[in-house]
Each structure stands twice: as C-alpha cells, then as structure tokens.
Length: 232
Length: 92
Image 1 (cartoon, rainbow over the protein chains, first blue to last red):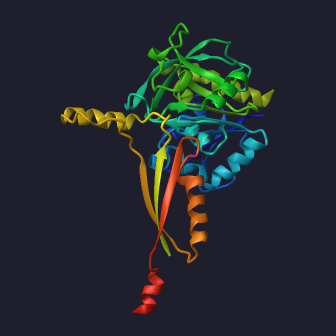
Image 2: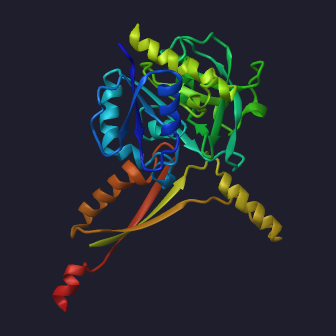
Image 3: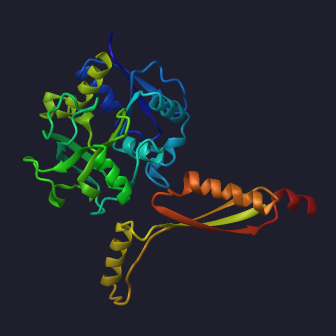
C-alpha cells in the first residue's frame, strides 16, 4: 500500500507545491491536490493544509479559508480520527476552524520572519513525531508575519497537562527562551496537537526541509512519521 | 433594511504590536501625551430585513462566526434603518 497525501489548495496558498514536491518527488508518496471548492478528499490518508496567504489574510489569517467547502470535509475527516497537518497558514486555519485551541496574532517584532530555527521536540508520542527522539532538536525554517501564538491561561495549562505542546522554539542545544523565539509566541510554542492526537498545527515548514540538496532534512522526519503511522 | 456599524476590539490583554509601532510614530512627531494606542476594526454593511430583531440576530451570527474571533476579540454594533433600494424605487 502506498500512503496518499491530500494537499489542500486555497486561493493564496503558496506552499502547496513545496508540499507536493517534497512528498512526491523527494519522499516518494502519492499526493493529490484538493481544490478548496471541492468537497471530495479523494481517499487521502493524510490531509495537509499548506502555508501561504489564503484569501489574502483578510480579516484575520485563516478566518475566511475555514469556510471553504473543502474545510467541511476536512473537519469531518479530523473528527473521525483522520490525520491533519496544518503548516503555517494551515496552522492558522486550524485555529480559526476550532480544530486546535488558541489564536495567532502578529509577530511581536512586526517583521515578517524568514529563517531557519531550531525546535525542541517535547512530545514524541504522536503520529507526527514518533520517529524523532524526545527532546531532540530539529532544524526547520519559518516564514511568517503572524506566528505569535496566544492562548489564555486555562488553555495553556491544559496544553501542558495533556502534553499537547509538541514543538517549542529553542537554541541548537535546547535552551528555550525569548532569544530563540522568532515571533513572541507564548511559551515559545511552535506547534501543538489536539487532545485526540490526530491534528497538528505548526508554524515552521517541514516541507521545506526534506531535501539533502538544501542541506536540511529534519522536516522529512515529521512527514515520514506521519506516513509510517498510516502503514502501522 | 438596516445599516450595521460594527466595532471589533481586541481584548486589552492581547498585545497590539501595530498600535505600539504607530505610537512610536507619535513620539517621532513630538507628541508627548499619547499612550495606549490600539488599532481595531470598524466594519459597515447592509442587512436586508425589515425586522430589527432579525437584523440583530444576523449581525450577531456574522460577528461571532466570522468577523470577530471570540477568543481574543469583543464586538459591539449599531443598526441604523435605511430605505432599501426596492422601496426607493417604489416611491419613484
């Protein structure tokens, strides 16, 4: 059996082809694009909500994309346990759709940030991270203007208690403080998972770190973990 | 028909980096008494129903489901009766 990924294409998505290329050409999985006006997930095993600027980021990032027809199918898919990975704008859409808790606001610096960052993996008992060691540091690039994750105290306590914080911005050696936080997110949060463990949102782009040519391959650990979780 | 005027404000606990940046501009202008600048959203639209209660319901739904994010924003609105284009035509 070959694992089949579905990459959703919203108007304004611009990392859909990066995801397609990495999954298909570099990692060798089956991939289909899923148009935002369709409702058919084409028997995808895993859904990717890619990065970009869906609907021009109007109103709030991800706010309008969540009403695309395809999102009804994605929400049902997630509710029935299907694996969904939201990257960057995809993470913002998952928050707006209520599939993950919290909100995303403008970077504290007000600058668009585009650079490689290190993430500490704080939970490797997930389908997204099972092939990474606990507390391992992975190098993955970020590229966003609105990546400043925020949630109220109650939500944060729950996230910590349920081990839902999967990735935090850190130094190469794992030091977690403001210096290594590219956007001002609360608790240096870079990626969170839902309680059930089948929906993950992250600001960094694993699909841009899959190719040895780019001298970055840690993103493949996440995409492969996911694919292998379908097979096992 | 009603004209809705909606004001959407972020909660005070939510950082507003845009307001902060603009306030720096105020300092450069030499304005020394400006503080707590917050940049929020003002949205106008028409609601084509005759009953005010029905209009309020629709505006509330629009605000809670799309215009505002209830996790970080509060909203308030006013409704102003306007003649619909249809009724204007009838009068002509």
